Length: 112
Image (cartoon, rainbow, N blue to C red; front, side, top):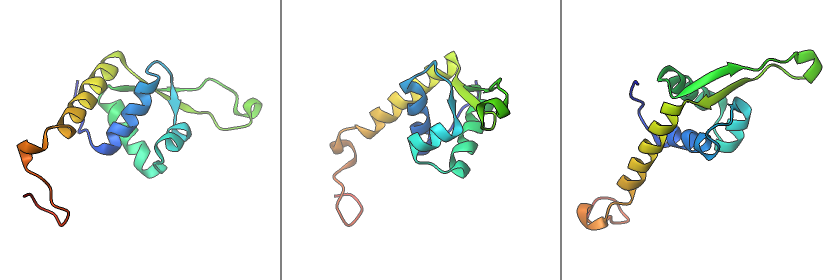
């Protein structure tokens, strides 16, 4: 499975998927959940699909009957869910490292 660079934005998207790992999510739903505009969200979704972490499925409905455009749903793959859990746990661990390892941050920047 290709590597995915886990930024804070990617982590937020993955966290949304992991909140309900078997549920398909569509773009507008994810935009509301993450507060990301489409120009930020869709490139992240495309990278996760290309890496095999997500699958994209087209909704099978008649737009005239449902009164809206057809949606594209994104869902975690089993290997994507496993990779996402691992990467988010690693990120959490890095953030919670003891301050003594890095020194104490000063308000004006830098380390003490």
